[in-house]
Image 1 (cartoon, rainbow, N blue to C red):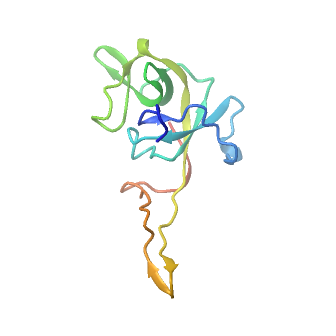
Image 2 (cartoon, rainbow, N blue to C red):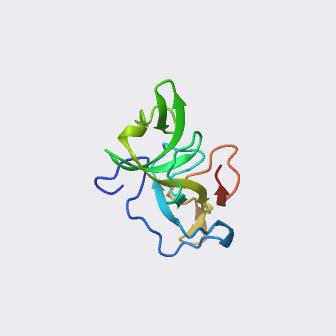
Image 3 (cartoon, one colour):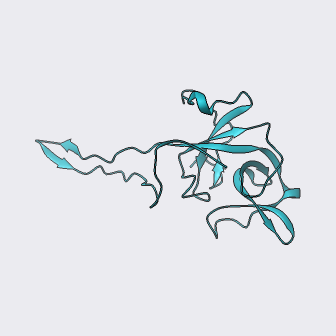
Length: 152
């Protein structure tokens, strides 16, 4: 993780230069962020790209938003509490969240693009097969597809 970047945050300025957004998910007012951290897992796993509509900044309960917070840019879900609308992570215990007054809404997440690589054994030496030394993250139980997923 880069120095200064907080867990559970989209990488600031992480505008992917080579990611292809399917035509049905393209929005003229949209953009993409690369997600770092696990606070929104399993629905938005680390390493996913979130597609964000920068024109949709009016918070609605249940939707996920990219926020400018005192701790940097973060992803949080809008939830209604007794004290009013708050932005909280999906994974409990990762962060207490923010009130509406503490943040600036950058835009609403309208799709998630997740890519998983297969963990295949690779050949080493004289025909010996060994599992890759790097463990790849697996999707959580119940998580279905690689590719874009509409939100909301």
